Image (cartoon, rainbow, N blue to C red; front, side, top):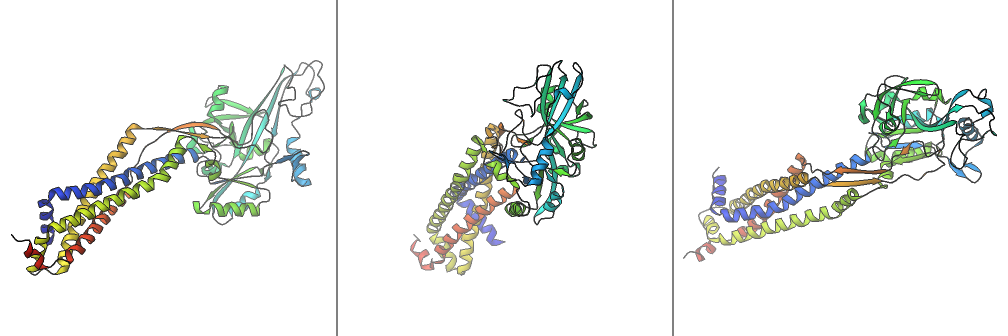
Length: 478
């Protein structure tokens, strides 16, 4: 107890030097806290933009893209070509076969224009791979709705899907397209649309319910509680979902089994969402999927990150490059200041420390005295540094700088129908308000670094004090 009291009294007696040493350490610790909080804020802002790769909580998205060559789809076997033709061959408008001239008609066709469907059993295979926590299948299709009046004298029937460069339908016939995704309601956490993305209403609970992309609903004046018709089946709109940029956006989301039946694709999906057991397993799981699933294409969060640009990314890159260097420089300078001040203090206390040795203090007690004082100064410097760091973080949060993130549209691997694609990645820009959260772990690290600085300064000062001899004290007696 005597030694602690003596340490405190010595620090109070030399309060100016104590405060100066503590402030030197505090500056370095304050830089660490502020830069650490800024880095955490940038990480969270970037994660907010990148999280909806294919759905919240999804790490990988698996598809089978169709590669088109000069002679049509390339790399497909005879059975796969037959399946592709069967799935997309129904979108033919034969006006002569729609009814009597002047009668009203309505026709729906489902197309998978850029992704090949595959058996739903592939989902179970992926779910059984090492490192896979969960996997869910989804089916995304373009629904081509054609409605109007059969012409009196129909022109030569069109033999392909209505689209750019094909003249379009007659004036009395409307052709509209919308993307529809069937989701596995039992695995909503990794579905293309999740409960967390619902902004109005609720999530799917039954097979005759639908969730709409809020942008699509606004364009068409649809609200929660309304009904929509898909291939002559009515669905009740129970929720509206916000599709953030970078997420896969469809216009309508329904139950997977229901869409499979409506589109005559029972037991088939064209997307698998995968959740891994940890982020370290991403590359391993992606490699396993590519080996076990022939022709598959695996999209990861890194693929999305490569398409993100803007001031958010620039700030993050700058922090990654300069933040660590700034922290190191600040700490080195703070530790150097503490060591120099401690050495200076020991030099000025030659008479005092030499006298302690002369009256019987062993060398270890003298070293402990100097080191203990430095540790207390380090603790004080850590507290001041935390206060400075919290102040810096609070200033940044108060300013609330707005950063911009832009996600570019992924390159298309096949033709799109009337501007709609299957599982379109929402391109565009978003603004993120930057905050600077300070965690308890960061504060603990700051205090630990301050104590390390005090310990280092104490070791340097203690080494100097250990070399003092009682005779040195006598030289300084006037």
